[in-house]
Image (cartoon, rainbow, N blue to C red; front, side, top):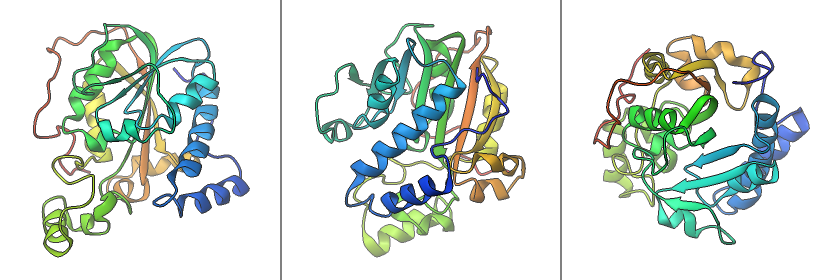
Length: 270
């Protein structure tokens, strides 16, 4: 569990750093490496102030090309990586040892086999949020931690390549986008992108006895975490939501969830 639960943590510290990251983000589509490498460095530095990282066994769930995986290793963690998309793994500029290709809804790891799970911006790419959170709990030892973030559907960039059509809703928006522009190059709705909302996800965590929510906050402005408590507003203004979770001693009585075609945390809610 976070050691400093009341102290804000986020991917950047100070106005100058935020401006620098924003400048890198504006070039992210054409040159992603500088932005994501800097974001990974700052995020892991903040993570290490909150939870034990050095010398711990950590899973980078949805590791992509390995930006966070490398930053976690530099912070002293023994890191495993998991990625479903082979194209994402292929984007790495050097080999990624310790990375397996598998489904986040059916993790190929033993019970209580890791000390922590880092999961950055992956939930919206998986159809079953409940299965992911349940599997993370299964492999995390009691007393361990999880850092889970995602881009909210109704936030400015919730539609990824379909932005801003996603603001018309998860049914009408993608349909209109494809009618006008054709399928997006990646993150197609229903196969690589699914709507995830703050309210239903918080409710889901509350249902899962394996997890205790330490706090939820906007990833890029954690000092404004009060926004997460405001229904409706939080779905837009939070932009990217982070859950800091602590693994309890409880064991789920439900069988391990398997992949489905609908996300249990995807239905719009308060």
